[in-house]
Image (tube, rainbow, N blue to C red; front, side, top):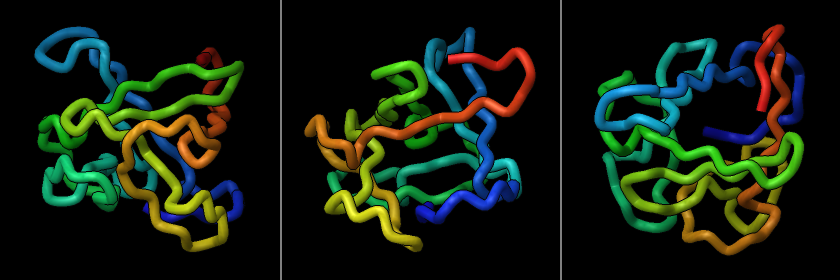
Length: 123
């Protein structure tokens, strides 16, 4: 996954599927709208600095995320397998920056602003 200035394309839209039952109840699978693949920790690694990529949905812990609300639209996203957070390496928000997993550090590099585009969707 890479950062890019907002242009409104489907490759910048995500579907957050909240799982109400089963072994991952209370967590989200995050689908990329343009590919319908999900956010996944590369090779199911639990190590810090693991790249986040898109992968076919397989319902493993590497694809399960806890969304923690920080503010009205600001969230942190934690992988349940590694307990690491989605992070922008070095907080460098330039176009093309790759996202990775990193231990919680409370910096802005681990905070994301979500905008709901579906009527009735809310955070």
